[in-house]
Structure formats: structure tokens, C-alpha cells
Image (cartoon, rainbow, N blue to C red; front, side, top):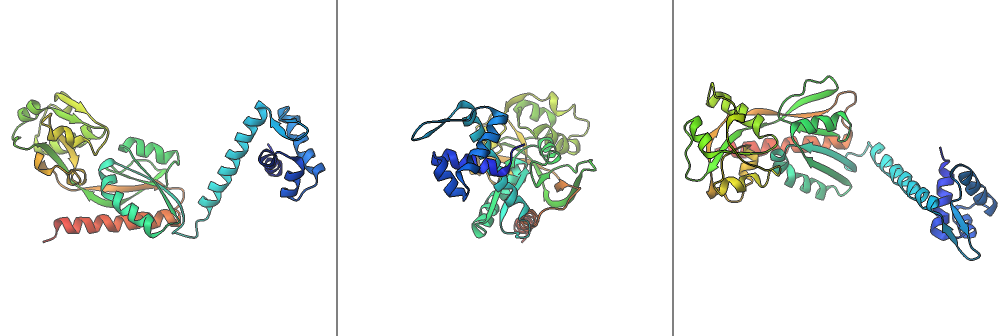
Amino acid sequence: MFSPQWIQTFLALADTGSFTRAAIRLNLTQAAVSQHVRELETQLGPLLVRHPRALELTPAGESFLDYCHEVEQAGRRLKVRLADADAHRGEVGLTTPGSVGLAIHAPLLALQAENPGLVIRHRFAPDPEIIDALREKQYDFGIVTLRPDDPRLSASEFAEEVLELVVPAGQMVTSWDDLARLGFIEHPDGPAMATRLFSRAFPGNPGVRRLPRRGYINQVGLILDAVARGFGFTVIPRHARQSFAEAAAIKVALSGDPYPLWLVHRAEWPLSARAAFVAEHLREKMHALKERRTGP
């Protein structure tokens, strides 16, 4: 819609406040600068008020200046994203469940410290939001607990997770009635995780939705605070439980079998070099973490 040179001219005018200084900065004649402004004002209306010693932006000029800054920033972001040859520079966006996020947070910070050119954008979210974000191309890759059934997405095994029933210290759970007595501290992935764990531990159970709900918390690092205070039980991945500082205030009443976590990205194109570098680094760290926890 607007010539890139017109945008650069307007930015220079707004910054210098002078046709003469803008022309010198851009290595143009004043006539060329004036022509660019006329072209813009033909489409947008008056953008500048010309005073003897200064220029003043009209409201339309202020709005167009905001637009120029947005275009300039978008151009810089595009250059970063297209600079794919260097795996150690540029932005990488990933989204994970909170439990996985807690496990990979420190390795991500360490990786960025070792590679100052990397910019890592990491968001915690439940599985459905992760899948939607990947479909909308908002992130390079995500990690989910259930393999998506969508031909637009490619999935590969990333690591293993174990679900745990966590109760206040001193409490016992041997039956469904014990769960009903304690009540459920729910979280966004809680019902799905509880259903997965309880289907084998309590066959024929009436369903987690029939259990009393004692609270709902959407911050994974805070869920176990409520359990530690005796408000109820929760079902949470082992990574999240192992990150909880007050271990003596809670107890694992039941552990499930390991199940895979899936690394997911858009299937139509491969991961960028830097995204693949980050993903492989995290895969190695998760494998090493598993080895330490299950080794002798």
C-alpha cells in the first residue's frame, strides 16, 4: 500500500522535525522528501503541520507514525525468522504443559546463557490450547500428553511422564470413597489426568466429575500448595511434584505407568535449525533427568 521509501521518509521527518535534516539523513533532495509526503497525504489526508521552525504531526500523522514503527519492527522480526542458517541465533517459540515447563525451565535458561543470540519464548498451556496455537502457527513446536490426530501436525516421542495421585501428608487413599472424602484440587489438565490414572486404579469408578471439587488452580507451581494445606488431593505429573519445595507436607498415594510425551509441530515444513537445536537439547536433558531418577 505504501512505498517502503515513503515510510522511511516519514520516520526521518518525525525524528528530525525538518525536511532539510530528513533529506540529509536519507541522502535525498528536499524535493524528493516533499514528493513522498505529498503521495502519502494524497491517500491519508494531512499528516504534518508546517511551522516556520518545526513540524507538528496531525492526529492522522501520529497514527501513521505508529503504523510506520509497526512495519519497521515487523521487518526486523522477519529478518530474524528468516536467518535460519544459524542454529544458535534467532527466536524460538515453544509451548508446553506446566509440568513439563517446570522440568525444562532451567535447561532453557542455561541454553540461552550459552547462546546469547537465542531468544526463547516459552508459554505454559494445557494440551488443547497447545494444539490450537500450533495450528495457528503461533509457536515453532509444542509438547503434549496425547498424540494429536491431525494431518497438519507432525508428532514424535519426546520423553516419558508419570502421573501421581498426591494427597496431604498423613492421608491414606485405598478406595474411591477416600477420594470423595478428600475432594479434588482441580487444574486445567486435572480431569483428563485423573481419568487416565483412575481408570486402572479404580475400575468401574463413576467418573472424576462426580468427585467433590475443593478448588481450582491454573498455575502448576501453586497446585500443590492447596494439597499441602490439607484442602484435598490432586493428580499431577511427577515432574511437577518433584519441583514442589515442601515435600514433607504431601504424599504420593498412587503412581501410574509411564506414558509418552509428544513433540509436535506443523507437518507442512520442517523445524527451523534453531528450533530443532532447542528441541534436541531439551530431549537430551529430559532423557538425562529420567536416567538420574531411575538409576541405581
